[in-house]
Image (cartoon, rainbow, N blue to C red; front, side):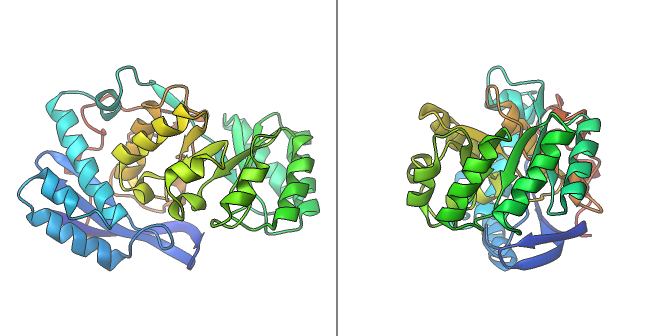
Length: 333
C-alpha cells in the first residue's frame, strides 16, 4: 500500500535546487512493515520517479522483486527496504536496532545545528543548545569570508565548551579551505563537513588527516563509496540518499574497516525514516554524535515521535520494529 503525504516545514530548507517549504513523500506498507520515502532534490530521485518505482514495488510478488523495482530510486528503495526490515523485526519481536546488531546502544548522541549569523547570534544559539544538553554543535559556515567564520567560531569557543563541527556545503576553494583548516585547528573544531565542491575528491584528500578532520557528505552522491573513503576522515551517511538503512549500515561498516568514522544524518525526514535512522545509529558501535535531531524542522509529522531528543541524546525505541505505530501514521495529508 502506498499513501502520499505533505508536511510543512517550520522554516524553509535550502537545497541544491533552491529553498523548499514542505517535505513531500510516501508511506509504503507491506505485510506488517511500514517504510517512508521522502525524496530530496539534489540527493535522490524526483517525487514522480519515486512514486513510479513504489507503484511497481507495490505490485511485486515478493520482497526481492519489490526491492529490484527501486534500484534506481534511492528514496523509494529506502521505503521498501525499511518496510521489509520493520516487518522482519516485528516478526522476530525485536527492535530494529537489535535486529540489525547483536548489542546495539540504548541511546545515541546527537548534535545541534546552528545556522549562519553574526558572532553574537552564533554564540547565543550554541549556548542555548549547550543549555539543552547538547555536547556537540555543528555550525554552518561558508556563506561569509573565512575570516568572518573564524570570528563566529571563536565566539562559540569563548562562550561554551561544546565540541565544534562545521559544515561548508562545498562553498570554498582549495585555498580558502586550507586557510580555514589552519585557523579552525586553534578552536578545537572536530571536523569540517564538505569544504570543497562534491566532485573534488583530490582536493579533499589533500585536506584529510590533519588536526581538523574532513567529512564528506555531498561527495557521496557523486562518487563510489570506496573512492570517497580514500578522501575522508568522516563520512556523513543519509539513509534516504543511500537507498536504505541496510545500505547505510553496510557503508558504516566499510568505513570503519578503513579507519573512517561514520556519522548518521537525515534529509529532514518524517518520523518513520527519522526513527529508523536512530536505530541505524544505535547499531554502529560507539557512534559519533549524529545529525538526526531534526524533528523540529517539521511543523507537523506523520505520527507521534517515539524517539525525542533529551539532553543531547535520543533513546532508542525498544518496541518491536522501528517503534512507530502503523495505526498512528497519518498519511494522505
